[in-house]
Length: 217
Image (cartoon, rainbow, N blue to C red; front, side, top):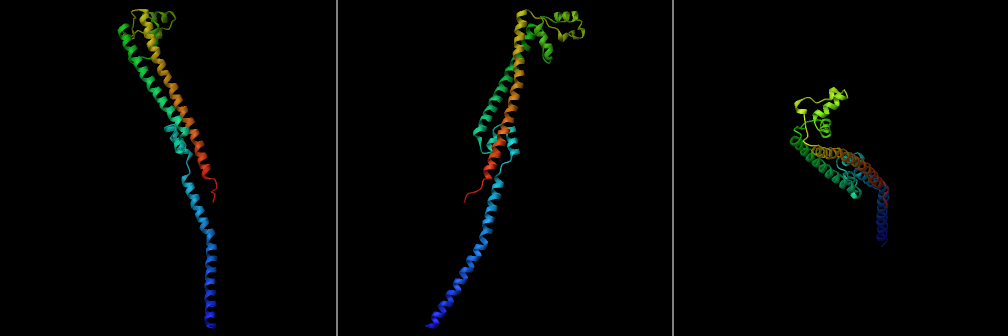
């Protein structure tokens, strides 16, 4: 009986000692495991960080795409919609201007006997101001601007009436106004891209800042 009790005591001591060693070993390795896990989380966060440079490129290519890259298209959609409107306006003005140009060229050929294809805008403006090339040359000669006279055969015109000349000038003015407005639309498109790029960088910064917030356990 004494031997049995003695063996039980010895066996219990061995088990207790082994269990204690296992607990101590796990306690020593716990900070290492926790540190490794934290490092993995930080690496994962760094991988998911957005680049402001990429956001700028996206916004310059198509306004609103930089905001989409920053996971916030709520404000970016307005830049994309504005871009579509600008392109539609640009196309409309371009079509209108070319249509008016074709009309006034055909109108001048029929009613003034001159082909304005390839002519400079200053020359076309004078065709719309003076009733004939002879009238224009006479005024230039009186002002001693002999170098500005039109003497070539393809520079001669003569409107059948003053009303036709005015109608021509109105068509030419409408065409020129349309083409001039294209510059404003192009400027608005550039400005839209710049504002979108600035907004995209702001959203990317906010996104990256949220990734840097401490993780709650």
